Length: 374
Image 1 (cartoon, rainbow, N blue to C red):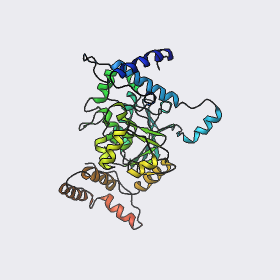
Image 2: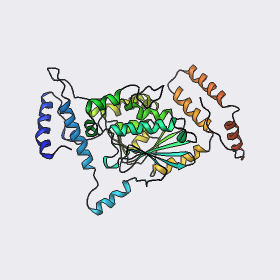
Image 3: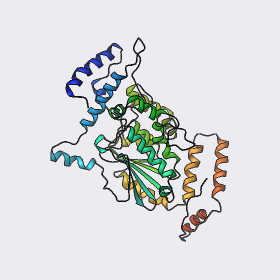
Image 4: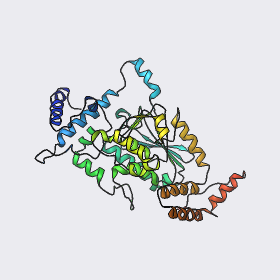
């Protein structure tokens, strides 16, 4: 964080500069986090020189202020009152930690918990966090030790929020040019040979490429890039008081972390435009009403485990191809939809797992075998 005396001198000067350009930030805007990864500068000077240093200063201040304001209070009574809003997970001997940002925790029966674990920063996104999330999704797809018996993934955030978006200060400290190159280079190192997205997009879209359901559990705050990550999941369970926002318009940006794919499957175009253009914050209840989340529950993790367990009782082949069917056809033309249905069905009929699923419907519990490749 910048020293207090430096902020007092530099922030008013930066604000005055922007006022002359007709783009002065409001006081409330300076207190908000959740800004976007793909903005190296606010815009050109009249002479064409970038003002990236001014932009980074403002964004570092907003991120630091948001994080500082969210620190747990020092009074023991207040801290106790906050405890019901905090989600913590004890360390497990068989978990995998990635860059001290993400934990992969086996829950049994083929269900894995991917935990965003940077609670002191409200799981905001610095460069190591981007890399850790994409790495976790990639490992679950390609590492046989993790993928062989995988049946479902639960994605959640540790502490008081799911994810509050970009940690601008953290990204700036990584070196703005280095960070932007790492975030925007296409394809990213995590998408495999057929990768299409950059790193900023892969933290969302790679969850769609897993052949198992991914269930996001949302609580506290889910802003900007955090919401775009959640939209990459197959289902989202949120607490009624969770706060969600597509926040990028507050910084003069568009959301570009895969949302043009994910949001069109969930809400009507007018709702998508209104939420994105305004950047307003909605509650979990409103998010459920408009389609951003699957449903609101008091305990999203409990609900996710219940649904994951139910899905694990179904054929892994059927589940994988159901996901492929809807993601392939949701916005396709009718002829392509009908052809895809038939092609995927022919890949299932007569297989062992299809027979086992039929047997279970008649009370004969046959084991499922590893999902078919291809």
